[in-house]
Image 1 (cartoon, rainbow, N blue to C red):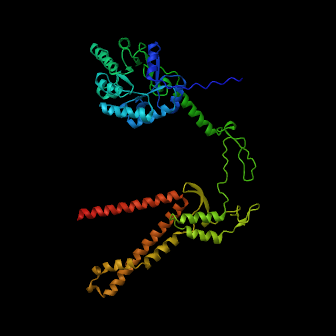
Image 2 (image 1 turned 30 degrees about the vertical axis):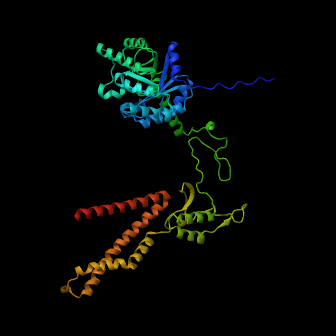
Image 3 (image 1 turned 30 degrees about the horizontal axis):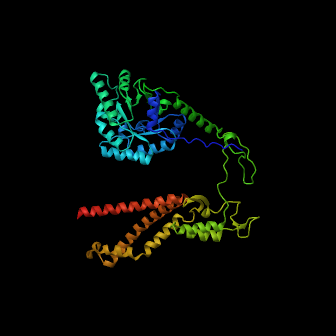
Length: 482
């Protein structure tokens, strides 16, 4: 009879009841801050029972000057990441500035942390002034951790970071805050920057655990900012102890990596596949340190594929492709590749294609596909087409003839002669402008055709926005004049 294997023990998420048991057993409670998935995963594996997603992330992760700038969406975003990275630890989410100004706002935002982000408790700053909010949250079934002493969200009132409770009046006020938070129903509270003797006295008077940060060893537990613990920040406060200097290690690793890349030693054999670079025939190429092997970028694809891609681009309004299709079909000599079916026609692999049909890789519609570059549309062709369009367009002639009468003077001679002279002047000026526009347009078109379709699209968008702006400016100017 074979033994039935025991099912693996399911990891259970800790609750505030478990934290209370640790406190009742006299076990010192370690807590750390966490702001992202991988860090939370490591800390959870290390057995840290409580993780605080603190609003300190504004300063140590997001680069804000104070915690006042941290928002609810940012806190929820990071809390979700920490929850995903843990299985056992109790996750406490810090209520950001102005998210609990009233009991109703506090209930709504704390509910978001528990319902959407997956936290098991929230933390609020303040003592007597916040007691009513804490009581409302607890009655709603939301576990609350208090925070007294230095409250960073009140930095604009406090003026600067300093130890709290140095005077008799401050000490009495701090004790009153601690008792108010406890009576409101908080399951624990943070004591920040409080004299060690005062923190120990507060801890003795309470029947809920105190978590100290810069408050001495007399508290029921301790909390540290994770970047201080691992030496990642550029400033380590006096009350913190870095157990590793990860900042220097990261800098050293990055420097070594950059040196290896510059020397050509990364990637090496251990980071590379078993087969090295090969040529077109599949023969291995000899590799030397620092040498970069460049494989031919041009691919031999069927000519029918090129024509099909150009036709598909006609639907998107890319100019000049109809002309290129005709050139490709008329001027490109196809040869059959040995070993392929009769319908597998390929472009010649030897020699270069004509300039008008040079093929390069461009990205079309999110896929890599060959695109024909422009060499056939010369500046002279652009000017000739523009000139013929201008001459053959009767609207332009009628437009100028409408303005001619105000320039005709009977005393200057016959009217028909003046019209001819004025027309000749207009034609001369128009010719110069057409030449300039044609040459300039041809150069711009040729340059844009060498770029990706995305670049051409951006150019069309820029021109469209320019015309829209000029139209709006004209309308605004006409409105003011009216």
